[in-house]
Amino acid sequence: MGLFIICGRCGHRNSLDAESCMGRYRSGLNKGSRCTVKNLKRSRDKSYGVDLRINGKRHREEVGSSRVIAEERLLELSILSEKPQISIKKKSGISIGYLLDWYSGLESFKSKASYRRGCVRIKSLRRILGNESLVSEITIRSLELYVSKRSSEDSPMKTGEKIAPKTVKEELNLLRSIINKAHDFGEIEEIPLKGYLYPKIEVDNIRQRIFTKSEIELILEISPIWMRNIILMAYMTGMRQREIIGLQWDSVDLKRGFIRLKASETKTRTARLVKLVPEVIEMLVGIRRSSETRNVFLSKNNKPIPYWTTYCGDTWRSILRKAGVENACFHDLRHDFITRAIRNGTRPYVVMKQVGHKTDEMLRRYQLIDETDLEELKI
Image (cartoon, rainbow, N blue to C red; front, side):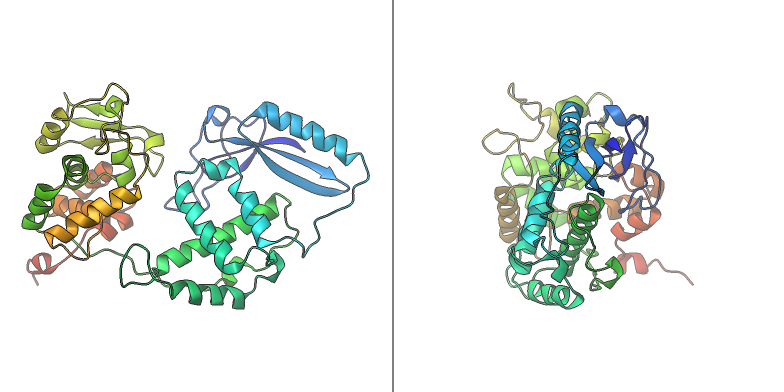
């Protein structure tokens, strides 16, 4: 009982005197493996929580990144626990709206790299499940109806297509995560539905799109210069979209031809080197540096790009339409790079280091096999 530290990477609750995180990853490529956060107290992603008993019931609450504020909250709750309390949280009285608002206010959620995407998912959950509906009323049937309704909605990004199964699956995964976290923190007394009872949604989202030489040449030719630089970077390095638009000059070593990404700048939270080819070095040398920001890639107004905005997406899709390129997304540039690198004889483990893949399975997922490869089959 008292204060505890929540690891921002794996979500494990650690004792206040813990030097390194003792938790394990609950999802992703590293699911089941030990958390790699060593100096927990100096981690920027950590948050503090309080743990005590109020009227005989255990109460856990995430407070935020300040230990001082957490200590004040603990003192406040300790005083309240000494007074007779009338419980306002009945087992069946917590609404979905309350739960989503509670989760949206957590510092651990706000600090996630996927925060904006999470907000969009919460908006969908709120709209379809209903703000006033009770958490205790969540059933297999209600989630099946959610899947049916959500899957029938038109995609806001792809004209003529419906919401992708992967999107619906991620929204339900978030709901399950929110409910489990609320139970851990004492916001709800019971989990209404076990995870294995959630609807199973089959997802086949492996991209099969690579660009021909003429396609990529035309795309680069008709792109505005600010977007052309971003596209060329993705096509020639295999870097992720977020890694590119967030890249700063401090990480660029033009002399040796490398980008040195910090752990905080990558999706996998692992530092890595990215090799630059001559075309990219030439492009970077030609970019005029701004005295107002350290960001490498700027918008058409010479402002930093905080994330892949609607304008970025609209510009990319406009370029594809003008080039006559169909069934392509920006992430296909990463698939294309990996496929070309392996076809040109680069050893797989080198490609993995370049793009930040941690498993052979993920590399195989990104390497596309077509008729050209199968023609080399020998029996």
